[in-house]
Amino acid sequence: MKLQIFYQNQPGIEVQTISVLASFCSYHPDSAVMQPSENGWVYETELAPGDYYYKFLINGTLLLNDPLANCYAPRNESEEELWSFLRVGPSGERLYNSTSYPVYLEDYRLSGSFTEGTVINRRQFSAELDKKIVAGFGFRNTEGVHTVTVLWTGPDNTPREYAEAVLGPQETPEQLERLWFWLDTEALEQPEGVWTLLLFIDGAYVLEDRFQIGNALSYSRDGTVNNRY
Image: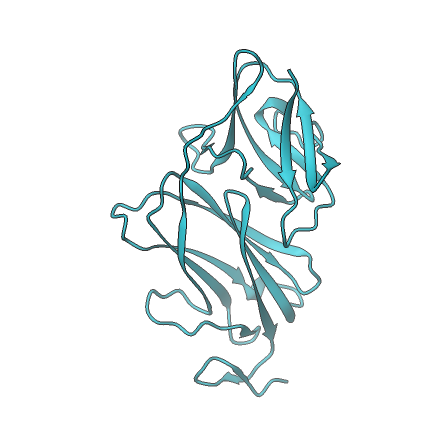
């Protein structure tokens, strides 16, 4: 029985090449190249009954989970990274998990520091003054385990960096759990311009934000740039 894996095009990512990086092909990107289809991409194959792990490799650099998988797990006990989980039944059909695992994003902040206190959300940063640009995302009432991915795209619309973290249920459902992601400005070449931050949960697009990196001598009290040169 033919089995199909789909990737649906999402905002913020211009897909040029995409492969299924999977255990059924020894994680070799050239062994499961996806083909264009309506509103996305598709890979078709036949698999023996069993369990498999996979992610999408986009443009040779970005790894994202499959939002349609609805089941994510580490590949072994020593690994924390979550992969999309695929189970093939005895007749060669793909089996799906029908349970829903909600994720509630309650808070998002963008600043130049790590703090749980009150911060000024900023959209202007200085390559001279800000060593890091820090994004914090607060979650409550999480069910199941999820992959949270942040992609930083430069002024030329080219993805520069991405990072991934695992989000699981809070010990107390009402407790706010914050995940931190940051862009190290000292490691960037020619950082000046408008950047884009993209957030994905389990490979699905959630939000997009834009901010500017420039050169500044100081900031005003509300976080805006003074004395730009």
